[in-house]
Image (cartoon, rainbow over all chains, first blue to last red; front, top):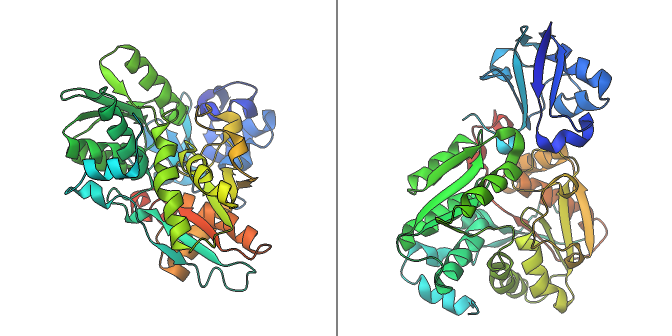
Length: 93
Length: 303
């Protein structure tokens, strides 16, 4: 089963021109690793060396901020839509 | 019509807008310690709207008024990720204009609330398209003909504000000793304008950009992947540098703890670039800190 990951337009070059990708469900870290296998370097752009979401990146699972639901360990159920947004354009509201 | 600093001052005499500009230049004593060069910070958070964008916001509104484009009852329009929106909303409140500001959804809560507090309307666009998506929406709205689209990315009044205020202030505050000016590139108004003022006087201009498309340096553009501002011209700078967000964040924290300067991340990014230059050059090196940290308190940075 799959989840949909929507990416900022600025990352098109890093994902072969795509801003909407499919990935396997699991934890957020597993979803990101799944994309990284197809687009190497993606994981390090979103997660830091310790595996946490970078402070300048916001990830939403549906309408929920992933940080409030376990960060990289947050569950991403089948059918979810994830958004990855640079925090430069994002705070809590 | 040619705008001058005297004309702009005259138009806003007796209002809060008179306090835009003449920002302090302070030495970075601890961060600069042990470096070859003297480091000075131009602290733009002391503008009444809280950022360097007050200068461009004021000059773009006065220019539109002087050109007869912005008349009573007209609606000013622009795309912004925040600080220009706050500046334009504040200036429009004082000048009696309506303002409609287009910005990506998920911009920090503080900025949306400040802009609305000044009575302006906020139009939100797809957060995944960032400020470029806001620009496209502003262009679409502008085509409807009901707005005065000031377009900070192509408006010559934006760099002119810096050519006629920021640049001369730095020259005067350093008693004509400044050797380098360091700033980030967003709309590029600051670097283009200050370059026009100071490069002919022998000052070397250093432009800094984020090192990656996915970055956290608010207000800066990663030019290779962004819509290119019409006012931007790489040739205005003697040196181009890139800055990683992690390094910028680390320096932003040092600015608060070691210098008492609570800055946005772009200030930390610019200072980190200036430190690299001060290791090699005697200076004085002036670096621009565009805004304060208060505007980012709801972001993960200060949790």
